[in-house]
Amino acid sequence: MSALARQSRSPGPDTRAEAVLGRATRRPVVLALAAVVLAAFGYLAHSAFAGSVVYYRTPTEVAAQPDQRVRLSGTVLAGSIVSANGWVGFSLTDGSTTIPVRYQGAPPTALRDGGQAVADGVYRAGVFHADSLLAKCPSRFDSSPGGG
Image (cartoon, rainbow, N blue to C red; front, side):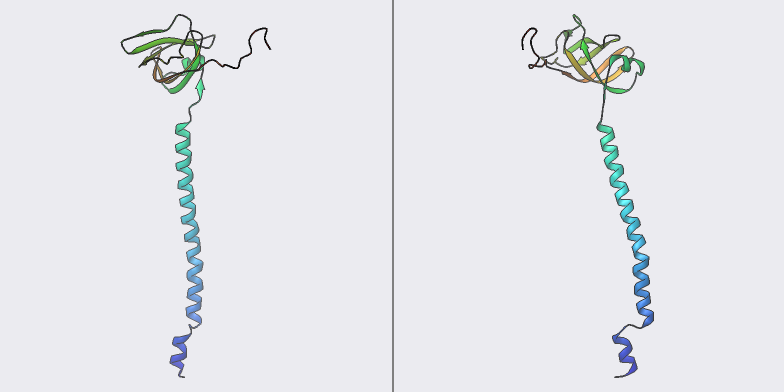
């Protein structure tokens, strides 16, 4: 066998070094790419979750910070429910602050004086403009007075 034939069959020392060096330089690139992909997934997950989380706010908290999209929760003030021409209006209170709420649409059937209501929307110019409205149903598992 000639020297030329032996050289073509097995890589020489220069070829092996290039192969090892090639793998060594690819590893940091692959790790960096994986880190970028993981960071992108983390950012997307965080932004999707953060945008969907809306905490309940009391009328006192909402009145202190107007012009923000919030979820307002409180007790419906007795005698404040008025509905006409596809609109419903009422006031929510937390005992210290009362906010008038306006909602375009049919009121929930559970909306009652003294009941709990939750409204999603924006408090602007002294009125809470609701995009959605929920009324909490009273619990059927409350113990009756004197019963047990």
